Amino acid sequence: MKLKHFFPLLAGISLGASVSATSIEKDMPYLTLSDGSRIPQLGCGVWELNGQEAYKSVTESIKLGYRLIDTAQYYRNERETYQAVLDSGIPREEFYITTKLNPSNGSSEKNIRDSLDRSLKNLGGKIDLVLIHWPFSNDEMAWRIMEEYVQEGKFKSIGLSNYSPEALRRILKIAKIKPVLNQVELHPYNSKYPTVVEYEKEGVKVEAWSPLGAGRQGLLRDPVIADIAKAHGKSSAQVILRWDLQRGIITIPRSKNPAHIKENISIMDFHLSDEEMKQIDALNRDDALWDI
Ligand code: NAD
Image 1: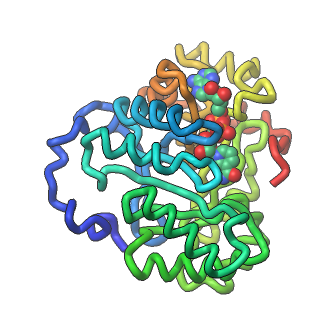
Image 2: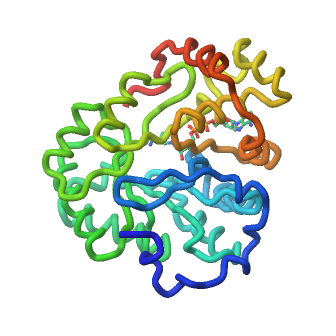
């Protein structure tokens, strides 16, 4: 289903009514997913933010031009995240909202449907992208139910998170609708090069969670990244997010700090050379933050 048909009541409303004229929004790269829908390549995540923090962070992010917002049932902040979208006054169809089915809501068909219905209620009745948060025993049943929700026009797209290539192929075998993307841990210390190619061969885009290493591992103090940042007059975080964009990865950094939120989206005005991209690639240690 294409974006323009997804919010039929809102389609056609002039985008000029919003604040969409900032240069960042004009410069925001979009990727086209396998079902034909388009996703901004940079967004904001709200993991570990309580409801009020999520509301504030998303409100600030929207003002600065973010349109992709990544929440989850597990984060317990869907409602406040959506409230920030509503309060922005910007037409809903300009946003791309993702949530994720929590596997602990997946013990039966009824529990899966109930939790998806709760997310729909929290997020205004339609959701751009719903992911299975990580593989679990009933995930094939969950996938079939999520396909139904797409056919009923409740979800625009569906995808996966934390799926290995083998687990992805298991879902592909039973899927009538292919997962549009797989959201996985990805940053310069865990850059997943061969694996990303495997996903992309299946037509599945890759979205990076913890793109800044979740503030752990000292990634933002890495001397190679710091030197590249200095050469461009940018911060280490900006260099890492730019590396994502140039790899064709969708990326969703999280911050409560308005200065960082601004910094993280101010990455459309510089370019890393092939040599700099290779220097960052060479930092890979296959060092996963979490064992999911
Ligand atoms: P992240 O890599 O985005 O790092 C967040 C940390 O970096 C925070 O401590 C923040 O204060 C700091 N930070 C942000 N911008 C900065 C800047 N410019 N300079 C210095 N520090 C900065 O970590 P994350 O939250 O783990 O990942 C991002 C999002 O990915 C999450 O919010 C969530 O939406 C998603 N996620 C998904 C999964 C999954 O299993 N699917 C797992 C983890 C995270």
